[in-house]
Image 1 (tube, rainbow, N blue to C red):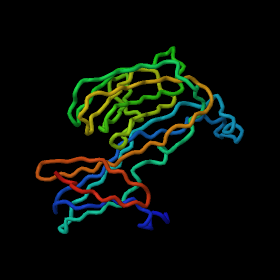
Image 2: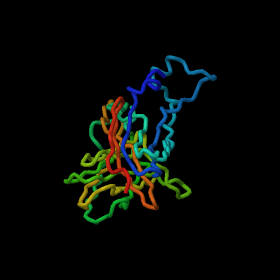
Image 3: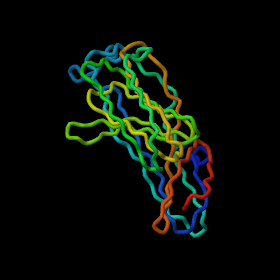
Image 4: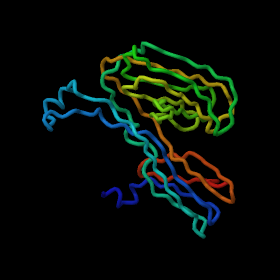
Length: 252
């Protein structure tokens, strides 16, 4: 509460744009709960919490969206006071019980050209015979282009459910981790945010249970979109806590 009231602790995105233009600041991501526990007689004891009981259920995943609009004032200057673009969960953290090496790896090499906002999908499956504790998907390329990684799970009714993905800064390679991936079919999507070279390599790795590992340390972005006279322009903005970022050419 103290930080919320102290503007010096805010993440500020500022810049100039034509008066009256509509600005949109948005993030969409997948939030994961802790493994769901089944209570004994309505109570979870301290011993059960410390010893990871067998009645521990699956992780629940749901879509989160942060979305806000602003009309550029007559002065032509705007200022967003926001949260840091990277969520705390994206910092380096420990995943419990993962083998050191994957027992199954699949690789896709691409040379098909795409335009910004276009994407290429690859299919992948976790089968009932898998002892999957962790699914790691990465995308790598040789240039400072900007690709994003989106992962979807095919539900029984055919709809796609978002899973944790990755959308780092230009040139940063994408990597996503899915703990306890459910059995079924997946869509691994490489989206062209701002890339000219079509060549990229995507790898999926499936890990069995094992000792703890440390992952993370990635960065996330806000997407700032300007709507003006029927035209739009979207760019990624990275801002840390207590940082001020000035955006030039926010509008088309």
